[in-house]
Length: 191
Image 1: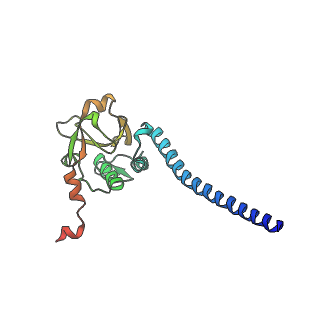
Image 2: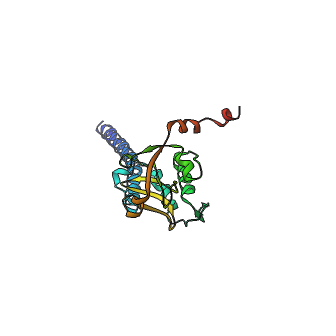
Image 3: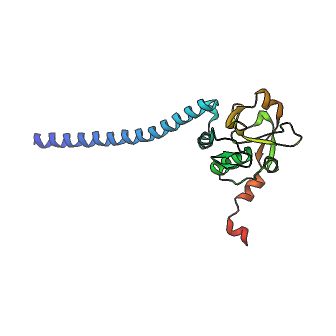
């Protein structure tokens, strides 16, 4: 009888250890995913110069990172060369699944103006560079930083930089009305 009791106790002990190991492995898998996202956020926030707490949209930072260093080309929309509105259009398509217009002035017609101190991650920033008209657009990342296609190619700059501060016009957030229009299924549009 002692042998059976010991065998049952060992069996229960082994099953308990195995169940605990599986639970720990599942927890580690979840933690690994969280750890990887945390590492990605830390890396991207460091190279982009944005505070870690400002990087809530990892997809935005990954998309911007993919374009960094792409050369500038007026009218361009590929990895071979891209301009500011083309870059903004690509980011909005990939990150927010929205199709926006193709030039900075037309994009501005789609937004509600936002004050500089009210900008949020993913908002747009508009500039009038040596012009009375909007001539440049970028995507705000937080912490005063924005991504854009400049004459040096796709880069991250600071709104506080003397040059950009001088030419900054307004921030903008896509209007709810426009977002609703974009969400109409294609079948409804053709009827």
